[in-house]
Image (cartoon, rainbow, N blue to C red; front, side):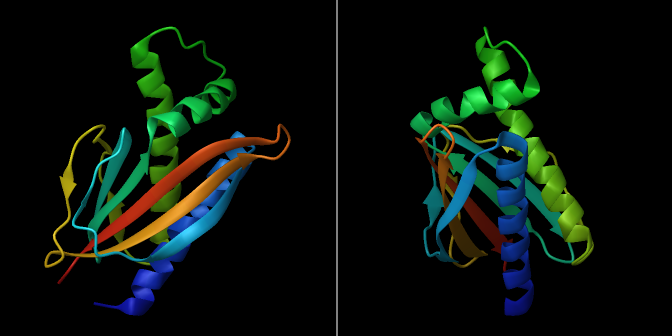
Length: 165
């Protein structure tokens, strides 16, 4: 366990997330909460897990409720310049955001240590167990807002689960 490395990972995740949300979608992500977590699991209407391994291994989870997903979807679709008419395209648009976050996170991690990102996995509506004896866990909560339209867009929850060595 290396608290300094954990803190660097959290700062990397936070800066990558804020950069993508701000630059790519033109909305503000305001960090509402952050800290160690003792939650033994998670479940969201929209949830993706991005496993990684190397010098440090674990999984990054991005979760949000259905309300946030519905409000965020038009921003993603507008940026991708696609017309969403089928359910599969909605999932594709949301997965694009996850892949973009995974890519940014991977690029930033290369400067910290040798870590390889695995393929993101869809965990929508699934219960994910994160036992305390297996993981060190951190949670970041972001409030999303479009200042230009004066619109509240919900919250995104990012969970970092690091394998205990």
